[in-house]
Image (cartoon, rainbow, N blue to C red; front, side, top):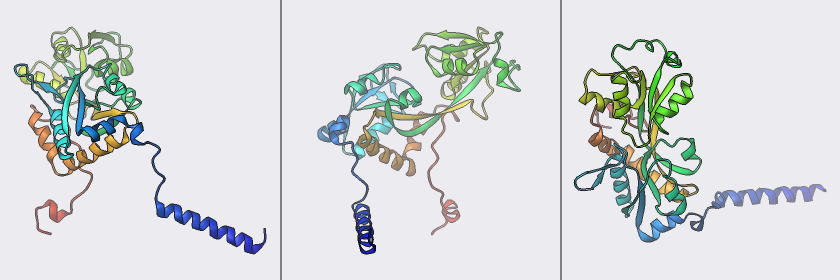
Length: 297
């Protein structure tokens, strides 16, 4: 290639790159046609929610049937700011909660999901709204695990759990040598606490929200070995179907706004019955010292 031709080729290549930069990034391959939930929400001005009764995310009044809870209030608030109405379309359950998303029966799974790998592989997430700490609950005179929880991984130790839930998953992953005493799904976590308190089991791994609530009604019956540092911490997120990026983005931005202006914390305060039961999401910014101290700027 001669020098003038080489120079012309270089100029054309540079111009092409400049044009690409000016136009911005290539359009997303995902269109409204690929994202039917987003299209339905925008066209109908209605968000259809699938939900699971799981406090403090979703709570149903046994007398009136009215729904409330952290997730309920966050979704209603966010939807209102987007000019949408929420239809609480279908009650579902863990283990089949993603079916309605895939089938298009609802647009969002409005529940506090820990977004474990099984969920993350099949859905997009929105949040986190708050974090849940997992406690290690034993009897007050239990000292075998005080130095190290590895001592619980022994055939002489019985762990109380519920099939398919976090206590059972943690027991099987971290303490395979221990004996697992597991209740059927949909059993209340208070039964795990009762098992330990009555000596039917030695330890259980229950969310602090439920553990502290049990202790409030049964003081002195158990202690939490992980009171200062939770055994595990899980984020709580909303779910939309895999590939629904526009619906995800729309609600994620409102959730960030609610976090930054304090609305999210205010909602959590309404449902945290015991101090330390839930962990807040840290704001993604740091104020200047003068602003933190309340001085004018």
